[in-house]
Structure formats: C-alpha cells, structure tokens
Image (cartoon, rainbow, N blue to C red; front, side, top):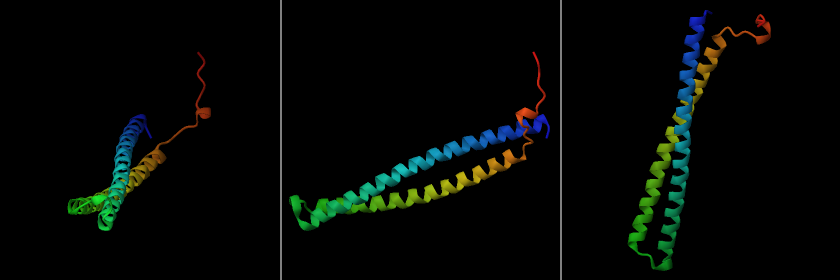
Length: 118
C-alpha cells in the first residue's frame, strides 16, 4: 500500500476511534441514568409501602407521588437499557471496522527498517 493509502487508512482509523470514544461517553451516561432509574424505582416502592402501611402519617398525595416515581423510573430504565444495548452494538461494529482497517495496512517491523546513521 502506498503512503497516500496509509494516510487515508490512518485518518479513517482516527475517525473511528473518535466515534468509539463518543459512543463510550454515551454508554457511560446511560449507565448513570440506569442507576438513577433503579434508585427511583426503589425509592418509589419504599414510599408506596410506607404509605400503604400508614407509617409516618403519609396520605394519598404520597401514594400518587410514589406511583409516579415508580412509573417514571421504569420508563427511564427501559429507554436507557435499550439505548445502552444499541450503543454497545455500535461500539462493537466500530471496533470491528477499526480492526479490519488496521489489518489492511501493510505494517513493517521496526527492526526490518534500514538504519540511518547521522
């Protein structure tokens, strides 16, 4: 492969690595939202249980709030789990393309290169 082709491949590999980095940031953000969603579901369930048992003098407003918290947590959890799966698949695809591009470059071992004496 000539130098122009190698530069083109290097640019493509760099672009793919940038994409992988952006996707990794999205995946990390999804993981944080998933954790927050699970916390919301747990808090809503706990508040609902406290309301049903009549502890701490909570009323119907607390029950409605806890149900909203549970439902909101479930929706957020489902959405972010789906996005995380899609992002992980996109990362895998990008890594495969990067590996294929790297494999197509005619790499030389440094020891095989001629020595230049200064």
